[in-house]
Length: 150
Image 1 (cartoon, rainbow, N blue to C red):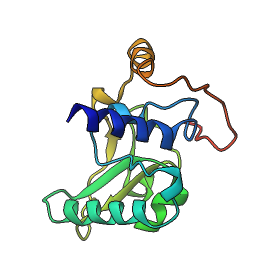
Image 2: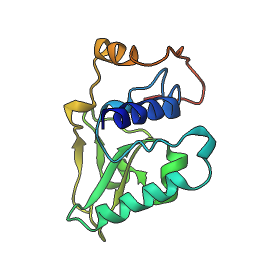
Image 3: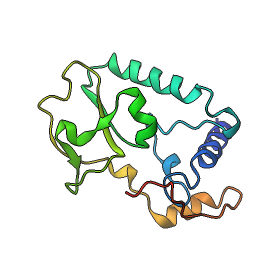
Image 4: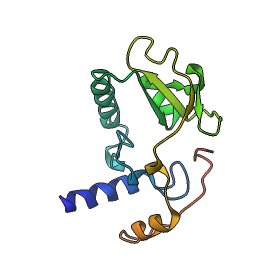
């Protein structure tokens, strides 16, 4: 089990390194995403199948919708829209295109509005991240024009 965990963490780290920001901390929180697909297997539908499966399973629950931060070019194809369309904004009262929501039930987010407060587990301590990253081969962090400006 520990071997699988470390391999999964390494895979996620490789898949998301410098994608949204310099380095990567997406792999530190247990959630429905990010989906980590090895570079050689990307753009072959694997991530889409995982996303569709998760949306289907979530839709079978009593949850009215899903909120996420992600790449709009990717998530719009699954029906995610800017969260402000539902009257939902970040805890700071902000809105930006990578902050999205999707209804899981008909009119599931109707009447749900206000500020979204993500769980504190999403807050990453820089020292803890540095310790965690030290378990893996060194990778240089880069600031790239394709990264999200959050």
